[in-house]
Image (cartoon, rainbow, N blue to C red; front, top):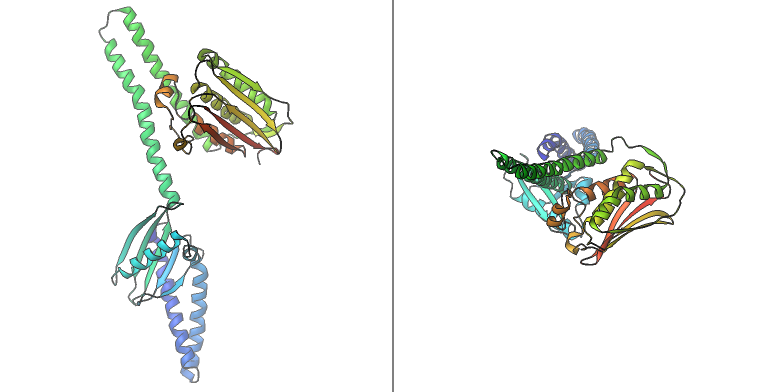
Length: 374
């Protein structure tokens, strides 16, 4: 719900709050007269209404602050109080609320945005409305998550458009070259490249469908599985790729008690990580896959490849993010493998971290709880 929608809900309660506050004061000043006695009853009722209103607005997920005509703070709800404090961000939010209230003329609504660099970085949407009585009600909505998701959505659409446009453009150009071509060898070579571009586009679409299914947790089926069998199967699936690239696969497993996981998703996660290690290794390198047991089950996939720069480590699990775009295109990568692995592991109650030194290789570690997914 937008701040504008909240305003229509809250203003009536704000008026009741102010009436109760005013009548309560008058009741205290005139308590000896019969008229004052009536006012006391009215004040009590109004005060009770304002208390109920305070309890109501405390449930709102956005901050609501009532500021008097002279600039004093009359009341805040719980969310607004949580934005007030000694932290740098809290002080900036409070200052922005006060400035917005002061700059809002009578009978008008005023809006502003506040971006705080942090850490952590936060984004706030502020809206103020001055009542006829002179008081100002200010809404402060923390839209950090919303802004981040919107930014991710824009990046995803832009990246997806680029990923699909490139093979489509290649196919169109190759098809144009084939028109009127009479040399059978040239036609065969062009047709082979068209097929390669089509396969590349198909791989992107397949990975997108896998990622969508894993993210939505659709068809999750937990069962008791020996993790060693998953590791061995993932290595088997990638053995041909490794042999073709001249990469040695070194596997170290041990037999463990089965844990409760989704076999298909975990196989996808481990297979994607092994494939990624192969792609970013040089001919003659070794990719090590190691299974260890302790308070949790750990799967480590280490390579001796190009490594990952420190600035890239925070982004490698994003969709379509590539450390080396030229290498990824040469090896047919879609840029979705690590995103698929991360979501699959998290669906199984685990976590995935990476350690890397540029030029010396990387180690991805999957950690799964001994009790399995819950």
